[in-house]
Image (cartoon, rainbow, N blue to C red; front, top):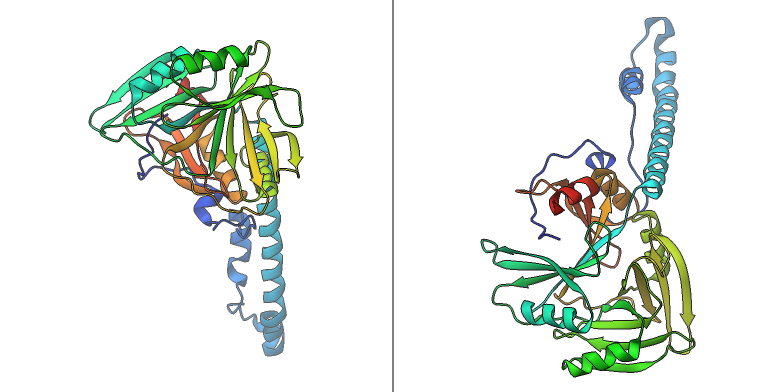
Length: 361
């Protein structure tokens, strides 16, 4: 959607502003209400008031035992408060109005890529914007309006004609009614077909693989008419259970299905905000024994809509993710976002739903 520029921003008071997490899902924040602090302020360990009626022994006893009891009570209250807050935040994530907005990646020849996507894949050029002071141009393409469809955001950086896709990025998925006809069109336009049409291994769905001018792979899946033809983003992860847990809790996605392929030594998990046949989904792939991947510099991020970027940041931290840009408005357009990394280092940007619609206007 936009370049992420680190900046200082005004942030609402939050759990994260009181305590920083370092990639761990354990929670160590101690919170006391104002009233609780006032009640216990005179009973900190080592500063117990010397009450004359108690005498020295009673005072020492209170100092030794009462102080520890009060500290224990304060700790229990803090733990209960933190647990309640965690539950509230993660429950809110489930209710948040989220959808995948667009996927962002870099290309070396913007016009050539636009031509390939419109002529071979049937996409429409929705809009372009040039930012000369930042030396880049964006083009948005897809199968429907941005306010209701998952779309592609291409980024061309002035003077850069080649990028490294790396081994971590997998492919994009596009649903078409006739895979063979689409493949023939791709061939006629000079595109590369890396897997001829045919049923998927172990299944009946007809698929094919093609590559765009920059080498990004697209899986063509033969389906009937669908409201969301741009239907998949496949990324490779080093720990599938960890990734599923994070995407469910922090991102609020639903696990739609998993499929293990021991013959080919990989497992996939499909997650999203709706069914595969009508919504864009994430396909996470775990290859047996591979825990890390080279991400290159071509693929950038997924953008996801949210009602509250501040609460989203809390959930990300609580679930072990890393916030790379604190929640707040972007300079110039005032759209509120928060940027983060999942446990495998894949980047996502959450965008305020209301601000996103205003930006489209």
